[in-house]
Every structure is written in C-alpha cells, then in structure tokens.
Length: 480
Image (cartoon, rainbow, N blue to C red):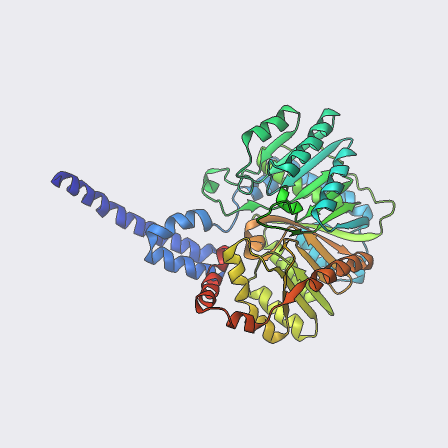
C-alpha cells in the first residue's frame, strides 16, 4: 500500500507541473490567437487558474481557424483554384452594373470573391411544405447532377422522402452527391447511408475532425443547407432535413422557416461553395457545369456569399455589419439565435440613432437555453437606442432573413451569433431587387404581426435567478 501511494505521489508530482505548463502554453496561444478580446480573457484566466479543466476544453473549443481547408482550397492540386477563377470568368458576362449604381456593393463582392450578377430569379419558400415540394420537384427534373448539402439529416419521414427522390434520380442516370455534417447528423443510422450508397448516391460526411490538428475540434461545423440541380437552379435557406422542419415534432410544435429557390448565374456561386466543401470531404473535384445561364424570366441582381472559419476575414460578421451600415430607412433581421459581438450591437444602435427602423425578430420558444438566456442580456442597451426586439409566438422561428430598406434582402443559413460569424461554414444569398424585397417585407410583416414586442420591464419582472443566469450566459457568448 505504501509503495502504491509513493508511486501515486510521483505521478502527481510529474503530472501537475506538466498540466500547469500546458495550461500556460495554451493561455499564451489563446492570448495570441483568440477570436475576440473577451474570449482571450476568458481562456487566459481559466487556463492559468484551472488548467485541468480548461486545457481539455481549449483543445475542443479554442482554435480560431479551421486547419487544412484553406490549404486544400489555395494550395492543394491547384484545380480548385482554377475552378474558382473559371467561375468568376463564367459569370463575367452576366456581371451586374449595380456596383456602379450602388458603389458600396463592391465590398460585398470582395467578401464573396464573386461579382453580383444579373439575369437571376429568386422565389421565396416560406415554410417547410413549400421548401421540400420545390426542392423535390427540382431533383425530379434533374438530367445531369444533383448536389445536396445539409447540417442535419434524419432518417425520419422527410428524410425517407428525400432518399426516395435521390435514389430515383440516381436510377435514371443522374449523378447525386450528398454531403452532411457528422456532428449535426450524429443520430443518422449507418443503414440509411448504406442504402443510399447501394442505390448509386455518393454520400460523404463533411469530416470536420479530419487531420491531426482537427481531431478534437468539435466546435467547427458545416451549417450550410444547399441543393443544386444541374448548375441551373439552387435552393438555400434554414431548412435541414427532419420532420421537425415540417412541424411534425409535437414537442417543438409549428416551425417557422424560410428558403429561397434560385435560377440564373448566382447558382454558380452556390455551387462553388458546395464544391469547396466536397473537395475537403473527399479530396475530389467532380465534373460540374460552370456555364453561366441567365434565367429567361429573371431580372434580379444577386450574389452568393459563402463564409466560414477558413476565410481570411470574418466574412459572415462583416456581411452583417455592412448590411447594418447600409440601411437608411429599414433594417429587419430574423434569427433563431441572437448572440452578436459588440461590433454588431454598436452598429445596430447607430443605425437606430440615425433614424432607421431597426427590428430584431427572435423565437419565444427556446431550443438552446444558453443562447436564449444570452439574447435577453442585450435588451437594455438596444431598447434605450430605439432598437425593437420581438419574439415570435405561434411556434419556433428558425429563419435567417434580413431586409435592408426596400432594396436588399438576404436569405441564408447564417444566424446573428458568434457561431455563424466565426465557427460555422455558412452560405447567404443577397438579392438586390425591389420586387423580391417587397415579397420579403410582406412575409416579415406577417411574422411581426404574430409576435410580441419585448421591453426591459419583462426582464426586470423575472426572478433574480433568471436575471443572474442571463448575465452569466452572456459571459459564454464567445464560445456559443
């Protein structure tokens, strides 16, 4: 027994200084590379004071950049960079002149590394029924290939419907590529994937933990929801593949979400985002159509912006900041998760101060308690500047939509939170068109009519434990 205690003391004597030294090293890395100043401070304090707890957490949540993706895109075999260059050249003939009429749009083009194009058509899909009906119809008319990407893929009713359409497409000779996030789709049965592969569908997970440096990085996720058909039409928005997105889950209830169906040159920008992800997951570059095809009845100017933790800049955050700064009369944003950084909060306050009608629409029913609590912590500073915050009542609101004045509308996968700004791969579509903006405005007016405006008194009336939890939840904002 004495010998065992002696050995244990030796192990502890070696392990404790080792972990403390590792904590100091990780604290230095956090100081040098953290995404935000708040995050750096939180990591440094916890890594120095509680290294046994903080070091494993830092290994999972601490990295700033998604390692390897940039190298694959920019330095791999060169073919992917060539495709990106060819895409820019291909849409060049359909380049919009809106950047000349509205010079500030050039910044968005630089973020996307693609130009605004004309000759597009965008149609709102305002619920799950409309989204899946239009998407399945698109898959059924495919004659060359179908690209499907989703964060959550379930083997439930709607998942089986999707599988049926994909298998029938593969049976008639259409190439079908299906990419899902393995973290978001952790409950997906192996048998479901095997059945699709047996039917000729190429199925891959995004593989965010690929590579030694990413082995423990569960915090990076591919949050894109995209379907591309023949390079001619695309579907982008908030709907994943699961019965809850049709309101079939009795615990969640009615589901409010929005997708957009696209036709025209902007589809190639959506397709390029998928291609980069497929290349990361498989190391392969499938042969796709990169011919720019204006839609016959399309007159809209549109741009697809893919963003993620491999970008040189924080693309999604900068996109939102640009939209907020561009607003002159109206700025309406809907998001299920509202955990913005200080720059976005201050931009919202400034927009309201210069007379913009700033409204933020959030769900009244939470699906992530920490995020729900955090959203209350911004109420005091937003309300004092005139920013109006609403909570949607009929069901869970999951749409990611922004309306700037009556000119620009954004529909995509990015939420107004740190995760979408810095941790997730996202894809947003901007449409600069008065008629499409009018459709979005009409849709959002219905949503606001079904919502309740929040005020600070509703928070002050809550119990002390709730108000304390709100403050504590905001401290975790950098990693949410």
